[in-house]
Image 1 (spheres, rainbow over the protein chains, first blue to last red):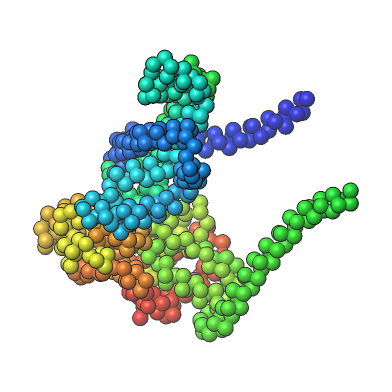
Image 2 (cartoon, rainbow over the protein chains, first blue to last red):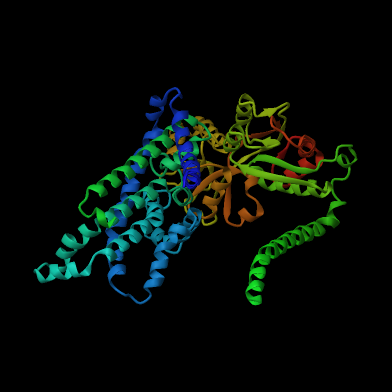
Length: 264
Length: 293
């Protein structure tokens, strides 16, 4: 019995060490660096932070606004071709971000399928913050839709029917019964989508370009800073690790306290 | 009973069988490639270096500025033909990116930078050793998409309001040279020129080839690259606009052995080849400016 436990313990230790060591190394390397505070005030860092917050939250908003109805539809209705739609929505999750970058360029680029029409009427997406949000939405939306669909599916339809019979409208039932019951899944999906948007790199640098304050988000700034200013790269990395860790922790504790936590 | 045993044997045997098949395919691929190249190999570059006692072989790793992609690839092919058993492996990228990789412990035998600044920093970072000779020069040029949506016909048009200008970032040699050209031109065009041009930048790329791509795709109205980057393939999609000689920064490319060189014989032969008449002729053919005619 004891030896069995040891066999289990070994991979646990190995994996924990493997995951924790690189993240720990970022902090151990950044702390002794001189001028961490000065680096935090550099435009490269502050602008990247500001831009990342704005764009990742915008993509999240888009995902929730447009993703929720789609997820509900997929969970409740048996549409013809639903399997195809399902696969299409999941696709960006498994595609390499570089493929997303090429694809977005071919669609929304200046000579792209839609981009050339937009260009003709004077709308330019390339090299703008909008392009960053598009790139982030493309790769992150599926994470929310997937989770939300599973959440809606787990809601007992009997409860919805009861709400109808008690005189609630369809919309009110959705807001007062379905959404609260699916909330843990919705929140979890939202956090995953937000995190994916925050970390988006490949599609952004290919499709949106790289300019401080307009398209240079934190991952891009880290990549560029690695060549000239290691401290800035370390500081930005440390911030991303800290923020991501605390958000994940917060959501976990929120879900545990929520009365619907059992559904998570 | 017999059947089930058979099935187990079959499934066990399948793995090594597939593995052998894969090896065979790889071997055949290698073999067919070397036979294709065979007839050439005796033709080229047999004159000076082949007689030397040291015959380079094994893998040679070269880190070179992105603008050197075409001539260095050609040189690698010729060296591989002249020295069977030698394999030249390249890592092309922005000079600062390559220097950083070297400083972080990446293995290379040779480093070729597109400006003296990155080579100096590599020396300071103790990742290169010995001489750092300048082996070639290069000139800047403005490129626009063939349709020229920004209507750029001369250098000063880069200051047109609303123009989408794509440059390499200031740390990348071509980005640094471009910005020097703007500041020089400001003396004549007025100080507003530099300010308006810098205000037109829509993206700062990490190496020169990304600037080429953004203009080729028509995403940017104009970009500044090296004359040598306008290869026949690229010239189908772009127009070039000359930068007046008075402002055009001449890029200088130094080359060096790295500190961690592992294949010294091959590295020395490579650098000698780059500086040789044949190497310089290849660079010239790709529109670089040779240092030795």
